[in-house]
Length: 97
Image 1 (cartoon, helix red, strand yellow):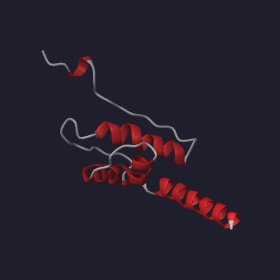
Image 2 (cartoon, one colour; image 1 turned 30 degrees about the horizontal axis):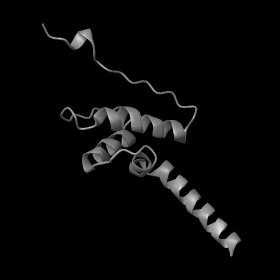
Image 3 (cartoon, rainbow, N blue to C red; image 1 turned 135 degrees about the vertical axis):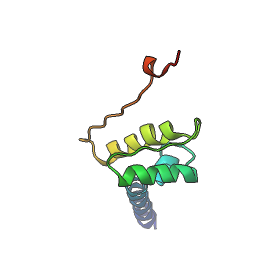
Image 4 (tube, helix red, strand yellow; image 1 turned 90 degrees about the vertical axis):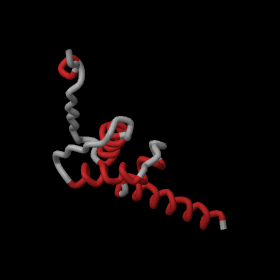
């Protein structure tokens, strides 16, 4: 009986690991602890399906949290040899006088 429970737990763990690797929203919610809203799923889909993407949304919508942090962590978990470049136009170039 105990072996069956351990086997079931291992199967469940492997299933969750598979979900984490294949489903970005599951990984972001269950591993990183972010609340993945419907507009975040749209951002994730766009990033996943396009080599270069531009996602426009108002300030505070979680673009950086989802696109720059969570998705990059997911890609590193999926492929440890990946190289990621994040380009941002912040700093003195964006200050208007």
